[in-house]
Amino acid sequence: MSDKGFAVPKECKIERVAATESTRYSICGVQINAERKSLVATDGRILLELQIDGMNGETTAVVQCDVFKALRKGRLKDRTLSCDGKEAVVSGGASEERFACIEGKFPDAVMILDGVPSESAADVVVGINAKLLARLAEGMGTNGVILRMRTTDKKVITAISVTPSHRDGTPAPDARGAIMPITLT
Image 1 (cartoon, rainbow, N blue to C red):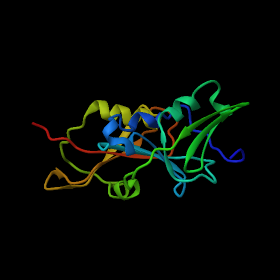
Image 2: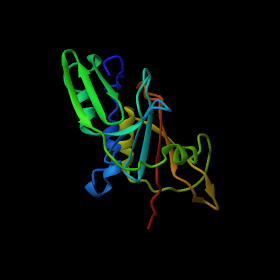
Image 3: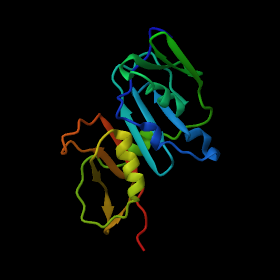
């Protein structure tokens, strides 16, 4: 696997979006989606997909969140991640760390994200858990986000689309996410 491998932007902390409950083991990691050349994470309430430049020859699999902590050790520009479907390898300089992939069925992120609007305007009141939205923005590596939604009769009918905002001058990666609305009482 030495000729494979890709880097992850240091400001993107996609593992913060993954589930932490051990009973949800199949989403307690980050999916490397080889076909879409992206990383995907969800906890069942929020979902993030990051497009990754330079991802070639990888196999789709779910990797442990510790993989991304290992990627941030030392000088990130020298560290890469590769995956053969059974294990993920973090390489940097002369060192290498290996992590077993997570077994289980990962949600169909493409179906979920393709169901949220990319552009839409709505005049509706929406309740959002601010901590979840902050985690999503942190996972994207941005300080601001743009929310888009579809509505019917002033009710949100789909997950809310979340994309990075470039308005604050922060460079934002090619990313998109989704967050489920909450009921206001």
